[in-house]
Image 1 (tube, rainbow, N blue to C red):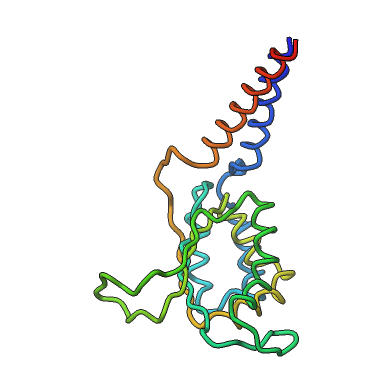
Image 2: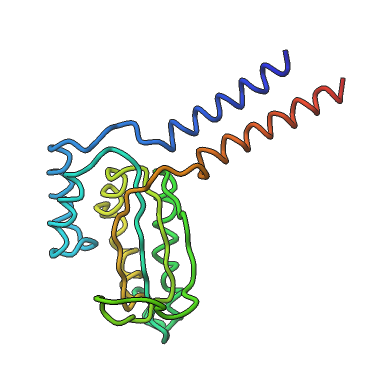
Length: 208
């Protein structure tokens, strides 16, 4: 009987995880898009020259997860803190943005899929501008385009966005539609719960 409770509990936890992690609401509706675009037009986080690009991205919504590829070049010299005006390293100032953004991202089942510091300059490039001095890159997983635009147009994050602007000299970001992968949270969370259930069952048997 204990085994049923253990494995049933593990299955229930995995089902709860998938309900949270996966997008179940489908593509954005036309009304939603208009609402979000009206919010975007009033939000300083989205520059006016990017409004049309954002609209096209929302209108082509497939209701699925996607990834945002980010290239960032932080200022190499200390920058002024947006609030105190104190000169601080750009990496420290950037934390004023990430400390607000990351918890909100996680609540919407988003998370970093990859983060790394630049280890050198371009080893291959053509038809693009010269390397502006990228210092690190990151790939962020979003549960849906709805979650992304909710974050991007949330006026509560406008003060935090000032830290990002102060810390970065250059930035580039564009969305990427993922191809099917076999190693990701859906797999390793399931395997982790299965392992925990197996260990719990072994412990119960050993204690009898």
